[in-house]
Image 1: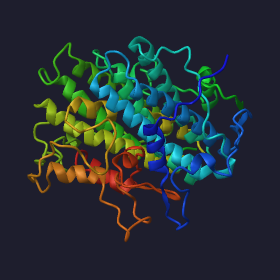
Image 2 (image 1 turned 90 degrees about the vertical axis):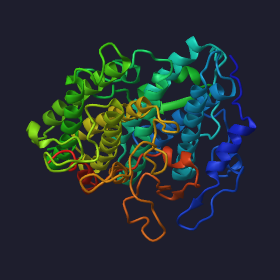
Image 3 (image 1 turned 90 degrees about the horizontal axis):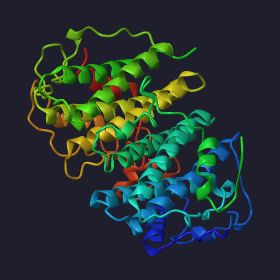
Image 4 (image 1 turned 120 degrees about the vertical axis):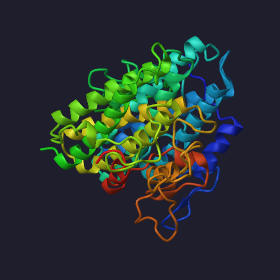
Length: 229
Length: 233
């Protein structure tokens, strides 16, 4: 089955460019706005398998980079075409999710440079009815929970302390996202940290490794990811 | 063997939050039965009790403080009047205190991850951080303050923190301890940044609120203690 091409509407590309019009503190000028997708040091063949070797820090970051692209894509689709009955607060929420994820993407690009997987991974939403709340909300919860757990795993796996420190900063934000997504439309008051997401006995975030998160979310990826543990 | 000092610092904050919610739930009227507010606080409290147990199991040794050691008015010494006199009589005040302590807990936990690196307690701490971040997001949402998001925007605590000093400090001053002081060209990057930090390794993000929201900043042990000491001797 052919996957649908990744959507790059002006708004999305603009926000990505905005966050990537960055100034490196070391004084080295970064890529000009819009130059990212034509960057010479990134693999340009979308048909090539993206190898993600989770035994290395670079591989872990690439795994998170792939998840960030997916989360940004999902959030962007919701923002561009809010499902029927979406509250205004929901649009603002998914807009923030998209923008935060875009900031993380910018960091991964800079941190990984020529070791990064393809910048414009292709996704497959053909089987997903993004117009229906009953479809979008459970998927958003699953995605947000999986990304939060993957970040927890990554914080533990990363060997370089400086890298782990920045990833840890992102990790708690993804947990906040998961709580807020689960809160949307919730009348019980407890969905934000329901037993599926947080173990009620220990109070600990449920474990899902980066590898397992990528596997669970594989149906969204049209681009082939070769994940090696 | 896990670093007991790091775990004990995390335990201090966990005891603080566990006690806050236990007292709130014990009130006959503060959190009415059958409400989503009470259900949320009950769930968070259960998780905090779990965190205490997990931190002790991981090698923490700090015993539970005596009830008299806590002062949820934020006055510091037990019995001293602080800027939050209505923590257990007004749910809005409870949520203000909870917001400050939850965001402190997230930042303090994050600050301890380095000390736990290489040991089995790191995974526990990382999972506590995530759950605590969910708690913080929920408390911020429960406050229902316009513009106050589940995530931290710059160094802004959000509206509602009084500037009137009681017992030597105001609610706003306590909030400033939690969210930090602005990073300047003079003090970056050596200064531990506040929540308005935009410098992430080699990248300085543009001055957009979402840049600061996208990254939660760690606190040093000293910064965390400066907040905790106001509520727990």
